[in-house]
Structure formats: C-alpha cells, structure tokens
Image 1 (spheres, rainbow, N blue to C red):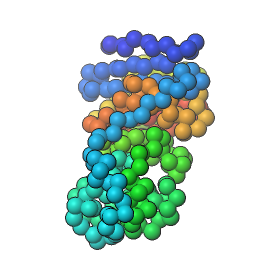
Image 2: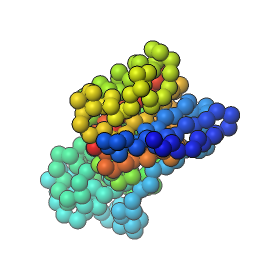
Image 3: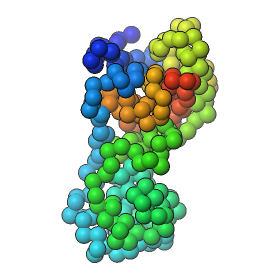
Image 4: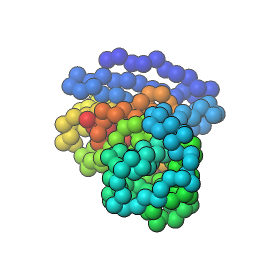
Length: 254
C-alpha cells in the first residue's frame, strides 16, 4: 500500500493519505482540527468559466424569466446558478428544478424567494460567486459538500443510507475507543467497511477530528489538497456523512 508523504503545518500535522484498494480505486484522507492548519490556507474550488462576464453583467437588459420560460436566456440563467453553487441542467427549460434552485439562490442573497428572475436577481447572478457556502447551508455537511462540488463542475452527490451507516459506525468506533486512522481496530480498510455495509463500489473516505461545527469541518477539508480531491472528484456519485462527538466521517461511493 502506498502512502503519500506527511505534510506538516505549523507544530501539528495535517495528515493526508491516498490508499489505493485492491478491489476499487479508493481515496482516503484525514484532517486534524482547524487550529492545526496554517492561517489563511483555505482553498477555493475551481469554477469552470461557463459564461463570460459580458454575457451577464447587463442585468437591466436581460428579460425576466420564470417557470415555463424557455430558450437561450434560461441557459444563461442555469449556467450562472451552477457557477454560484446550485446544480441544474443547462437545458434551456425553466422547470421545477430550476425554480427550486432560483428560489434557494434568491434566499441566499436576501432577495426573498419569489422564483421570478428579474433585474435584481440577474445582478446578483452576475457578481463573483461566494468563496464559502451560504449560511442557509451551514447546518448540513452534506449540503456544503455538494455546494463545493457544483462549483467545481461536478454533479451533486446522492445520499446513500448504506454509506451513512458505514460512516456512523466508524465515527462511533473511533470516538469510543479514542483512535484516528483509516485502518480500523480490526485491521479493516474503508473499502471493506463500506462493502460490509452493503455498498458494492467504495470510492473514498475523509476523516476529521476535533472540529465542533460542520463549517469548521468543510473548511478544513477544502483547505487540504487531498481531502478536497475527494470532495470534488466528479466520478463519485454517492455519499454518507456522520459524526460522533468531534469525530467526522465522509464515505464516498462510485
């Protein structure tokens, strides 16, 4: 098994490991609390340049669009929503999924949630995207993980009860017995633990310890190249997250 070199940050270490598995391309990483991370080391997910600024900045001249609208203006809307972290297909059809994304975006920037895209919403969409998830997502590590994925051009992950079960059992075991490792007390790997939970295609695992809030966890994960790679790996399609005290686990699946 190959191990990536340790990367030291100040006195404590931010430990990152890549653990290829025999039966799946597994990617594992673990993070220590934010206190161990060099100040200002946050990483912003790359954002595909889907729309040039000139296309969007003339908000006053953009036609108002709403549920049922179709055409190239809706495509621009959908692409800008994706840049800001709301995943919708850029198909030019303002359907129920686009409406839900618009309403969520509007709430995040203080525009209410009417769902009609007029000059104020176009102006907000034309601004540079936020570097961190909006406050409306701070209560969910799962939602914040998907926010970063969409900004990186990936589809959002789907919640999976089997992965969640594997994550919860492992978080509880580490917290109960006071250890922090991708290798379980019984010698198990994350690939084995995920398969034991009934999920056939393990993908990766992120571990964190010491953080007291979900925002601290995602900040630390995204500040580490290896952890961020798991979060924005577009080939992953499902996710389970869990915590036990200050132990946090993310289990990814293909």
